[in-house]
Every structure is written in structure tokens, then in C-alpha cells.
Length: 372
Ligand SMILES: Nc1ncnc2c1ncn2[C@@H]1O[C@H](COP(=O)(O)OP(=O)(O)OP(=O)(O)O)[C@@H](O)[C@H]1O
Ligand SMILES: [Mg+2]
Image (cartoon, rainbow, N blue to C red; front, side, top):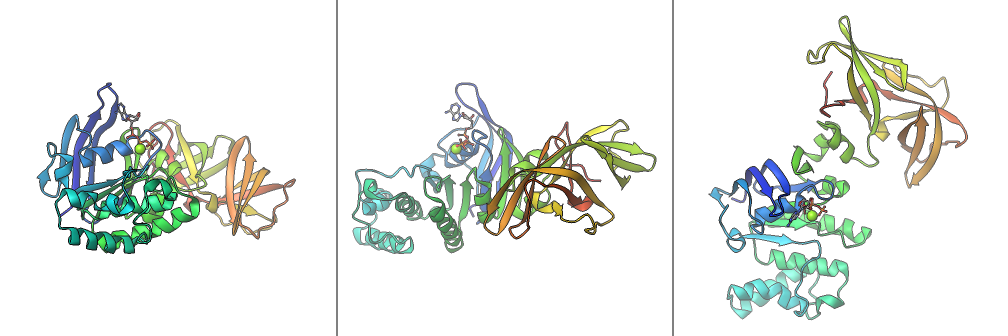
């Protein structure tokens, strides 16, 4: 069993800074869990307290059925791969990989067989006699992985292991890590601030802000149902468009009006009774791919479509099969993602539309999602 349970963890560093606040997180056995969040949000701190490299101020950590608050890192059966690989510079690739097995006093032949076997899987069997300084970033990264795998831990912790390698190799290595996770059948906890990386690898993603978990969910659910403004803005590139608006009670209906153009009103049947009587400040979020450029005025609009008229174009960015159109609507910047074949004239003004069902609505004050 290699499930992990962090219960009500608070971590205050010796200088008085509280990096984690009352954090509860369950990692399931054999799960690929990815932690994401901006720099300084506490991702590495979470890994370090799971590994036992940092103590906690309050709370409880369980690995399997055991409370490990006072168990040393060595006894936790966890391997951690760091961003800078932390290879031993004076040892060859072979000796870097063999290091932990030698400490365990395994027989020479047994160590040899394991190193050869794992180095073949990771395609580093041809560089076993080299020293780390002579290796490329990708090779160092594989050696660090090999050194972690060889110990056969129950849990792997990865702290941004791909940030030092180029984009192409990073993509390949992501796929290899996914395969490795399947093959090893162990629990992976992986830290990144790259949400694309999180989306491609995770069974579940944990979104963190300022030491507090914002949402834990599958990549699909995070993308389709962000439960607050931070998650909505963090997951998805380019970022979700946000437009300020107000929500009014209007007899038996709720009416939404955009601040930048109050003639744009949308009515909702009043099901949600939590909306206060006074005008509620809200933020409407729409993903770039859910906005459409209306090419000809006669383009058919559905009854519930919302139209932003006379948007001017500020820039066009071609991304291969898609194009990003940066528009300005009444001093609000809006990004629309369209097929690359869509013809757009920069000097022209365009109307853009989106469907009521593609809107995400958030309370501006609490930043929480509102369901209408
Ligand atoms: N030893 C320490 N003493 C005091 N504060 C620390 C210590 N280590 C980390 N912190 C602070 O705790 C917060 C969380 O740090 P952490 O390294 O966990 O962030 P992170 O999410 O991994 O960031 P990054 O993406 O930049 O690696 C930061 O504000 C950091 O400055
Ligand atoms: Mg970090």
C-alpha cells in the first residue's frame, strides 16, 4: 500500500513564514498526482514534507497505514528526483545508479544486473562509464530517474524534473514517464508550474495558491468545471477570458449585465436562491475556443448567443493549425482561438459571439463559482 494522507498540515519555516496552511490531501495508491501552482505556492514544501526532508508544524502524515511524522527520510521508502538532478559529479553514471544499492550492501552481481536492466529501459546503457559533467540535460535527467527507480521505492516524488531540458525532449520524456508509471505500478507525485505538463500526465491535478489547495480533480473536470477564479485562470492556454458583469434579481428571473455594455443582458430562470437581492459583482469567464468570430452579419446566431460588437484586432498569432486573435472590446482584452484557415483582416472590426452555456460565472468578491 502506498497511499499517502496529509491531514491538516501547517508548515511554518524557522523564519516565521507559513508556507502551508491547514492542508489536507489524499494521494491514492498507484496514482499519478500532479501539483501545480505559481512559484512560491508551496509545491516543493509539500514534496519535502512527504519525503521527510522538512518537518511539519502541525498535522499528521500517513504513508499506507502508518503515521510517519517522526520517521526519517531513509525509512520512508520514497525516492525524490530534483529539478537539478543532484547527481554525484565525481561518480560515473554506473556508480551514480549503483550508489544506493552499495549502501544496502547488495552483492556485486546483483547490483550489476539491476543497473544494466534499468539503464537499458531508460536507454542510457551506452553512457554508463561517463561522468555527469559530460552528459546532456536529457541524459542527466534519465540518470537521475534511473537512480531513483533502482531503489524500488513505493512512492516517487518529482520536483520539476523536466524544466532544464528542451521542449522536444520534454515532450518525449513526459510520455516516457507516463509509461514508466504504468510499468512500475507505484505512486507518483509530480510537481510542475507548467499546466500543459500537468494536463498531459496527471490522473488528478492539485491546484495550489499561497499554500492553500484550490481544487483537486481530473484534468478534464478542472478544465470544464473550475470551481473558482484562480483555477479557471490557471488551467488552459491561452488563459480563459474574464469579463466583469453584474447579476440582478428581476422578479422571477436573474439578469446578467456586462459592465462594459449594459445593453447586453442575459436572463436566467431563478433557481439559485443564494444570490443576494442587491446587485452582485461577478466575473464571466469564456475560454478562447468558445468564442467565435462572426464573419458575415447574416451568420446564424442561436437564441442564447451573446454578441460583442465592433471588436478591433490588436494582433494575430499563428500556432500551426490554429490562430489566436487578440481583440479589444470596450477596453477589455479578449483572445479568440480559431482554425488557422479562418481569414481575418487586421484593419477590420469584428463581432464575436459565445453561447450562454459556455460561460463560467464567478462571484467577484469570493472568487467562487456560481451555478445559475
Ligand atoms: N527554508 C525556508 N525558509 C523560509 N521560507 C521558505 C523556505 N523554503 C521555502 N520557503 C518559502 O515557502 C514558500 C513555498 O516555497 P516552495 O519552495 O514550496 O515553493 P514552490 O511552489 O516549490 O515554488 P517554485 O515553483 O518557485 O519552486 C515560498 O514563499 C518560499 O519562499
Ligand atoms: Mg519548487
